[in-house]
Image (cartoon, one colour):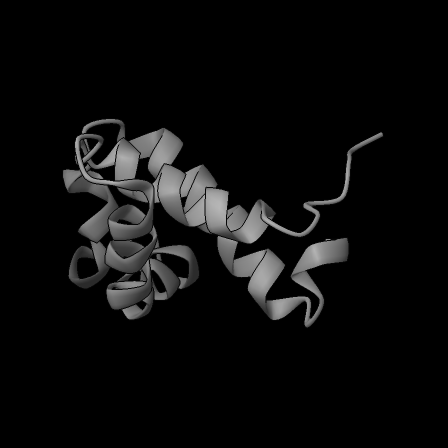
Length: 85
């Protein structure tokens, strides 16, 4: 049985998406900001991962992990209550 994301879980999912892009030298806040700035690309990647026009995730250092993390991030956001996701 999984655990709830909790108070900071959404933040750490955003950090992880950026880290999987190879931008792990940025501060945690900057990594979360990078993901927020690219949230439309994240959402498109989740919605249509095999569409050639939505291949943002394939350019990550760890593309399959990036896609899986993007899926969790969007599911948490769309849940309406990320803290209890």
